[in-house]
Image 1 (tube, rainbow, N blue to C red):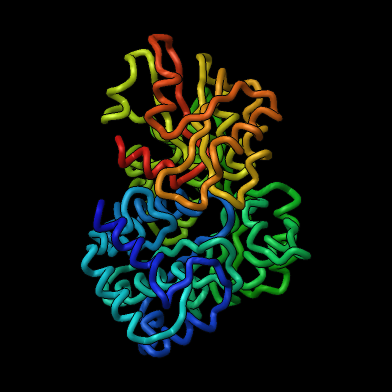
Image 2 (tube, helix red, strand yellow):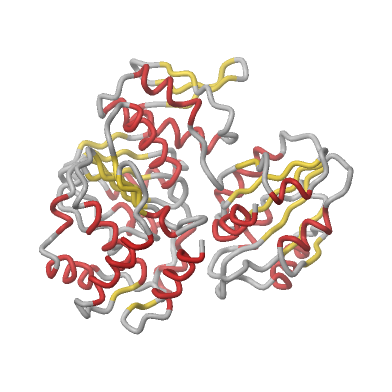
Amino acid sequence: MSQSISLYKLLANHKLFNKTINFDLKRIKLVLKKLNHPERKLKNVINFLGSSGKFTTLYSLKCFIEANRQSATTYISPSLKDIKERFWMGGRYLTHQEIRKSIKLIEKLKVPLTIFEVLTVVYILNASKQNTDYHLIEAGALFAKDSTNVFDFPTAQVIVNINKQHLNFLDKNKKTLDEVIYQKVGFLSNFTNIYVGKQTPYVLGKIKQNLKKNKSKINYPNTWKLIKKNNRYFYQDKKNIIKLNNQNIHSKGLLENLCHAIKIALDLKIDKNVIEKTIPKISFEGRFQYLKKGKIKNKLFKNEQIMIDGAHAETDAKNLASYLRDIKQLKYAIWSMMKNKEPDLFIKQFKGLFEKIITIPIENEKNCMPAKDLKSIAQKSHFKVETAKNLDEAIKKITSRDKKLIVCLGSLYNVGNVLNKN
């Protein structure tokens, strides 16, 4: 863990690397050219882009590929517990030493990069040395000039749910949902297979407009559906019905991401039986995750449950709130959030759900919202709110012998802290 913090500090304090987000492909393309184009060695690249669901869709597909006795590298963002989680190399994570060595190699090129660009190059350098069947790559905030948009002929490009989550990365006069859609979808390859996940009717219409002239094979979300029969969920398309036999995935949104991955896996010729056997084993760390053991769980009374979820956008909040409404017991929240989000729109979705919200800062994150600011926002939506200095203090303010569910929500970065503490 200390090595992971050390590597993040190295990047954050480096004179050549910039913490601010600056979308421009010129820098990373220059670095890749100087490195003799390692990105061209990656075969069967699958990009994942959008606002909500990139990781869960990517991870589900990875599970199906590996169950099919094939291999895949993955690049994800952010990591939860350790920087290594960003770089899966088809059978193991990169070591801290390998990451440090790659950073030193990039350093020697003397090209100013953003931290996300450095991490992308670290992935590409090491993935290019692997003999794997697929390379699954999660985009950053947008896609037009995102550092993951450097592959000429990807096998597939997967569009997950698009919402207003990344408005803050757009110019002042372009902060619209239409522009978010354009930045994510308007720059896809013309020579690939495009898979569009479930969207609102408005977003889907705009996606279709943006892809009108795209020559790729486009799979819209009407090619499959999530159905419910006798309180059980199933994936269905024209040829298949697959039971979603899983005790770890708790929301409709996450089940739709699983279905999206099933559709892609079937098109990759992964056998239906392999998919069915793999579904029960899939779980998403930090997404609707109940802590069933560990140091934090041990501090609670037997009647208390604790769940963590890194959702931080309005759409994600609606998904979580829909799930929580079906739970008929007392519910308390521990809320933290990074700056540049929309906390007022986020917390409004939970009206009437929580007995009390405790707001906390995110440890080791300078760009998090102060607990007092979150308290003020929650009070405007008529929640009972208190602040706490940290997670431990928040739990002390909530824990009792009463049966209840404690939900830590609002930030993947805080979810990472909770998992490490647990």
